[in-house]
Length: 264
Image (cartoon, rainbow, N blue to C red; front, side, top):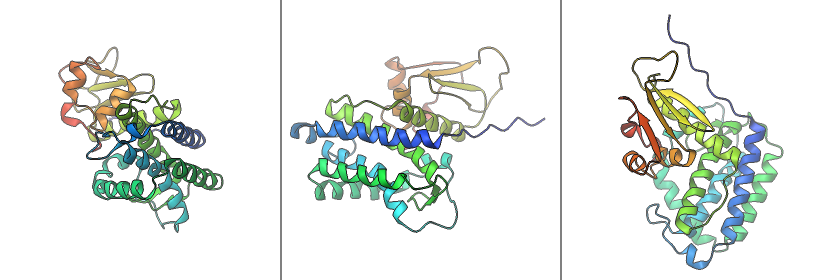
């Protein structure tokens, strides 16, 4: 008998909408409090400054508004679990656009206010199944908003580490981000020999090999959500996380170093 197909995870669209708006609100308040000295610090993302990173964070939700303003594409092109692997090709364009956005919008408060108003107004009437002509491929609004939790959570963490801030992470946004990146690992390395635990949000099985059916699996990886997100996006590497005791890994198939990062 062939193995049972894994069910694709679903997300509550209403909760994801709330999470996106909540996390953007958290970032807006945090950016408002930044000093000029903080804004001038390196963001540790290429040659970006914290000011450019702060500007880039508005792009995470402005792309929703901008795509809702565009004509609806004729067909869906990208599934949610394909998105993490489709982002690297756009890195150059995104970097150029970020520098231009920061240069053209020295008043970050005004930029954030404008972007927040636009996304709030457009989400009030847009249906979940509305297709968006996203740069990575046409997606439903519901799926695209899940990807926005990844952008917002990852870059909020970048901002906190670069500027020394403590901008809170919305729980629902953090959960969605963690789960999407965990499921992406299972797509990249299908199998059931290794169990990856990211409490309290996700457990996935991956990596080819003997399948366990009961009791504690022979290969187990466990870490916290932020460490997992940093590993999946290349903010830290596998060896560093192990050496710092941020990850526990047991079993001969528990070394995920060769599979990470998932996103560049």
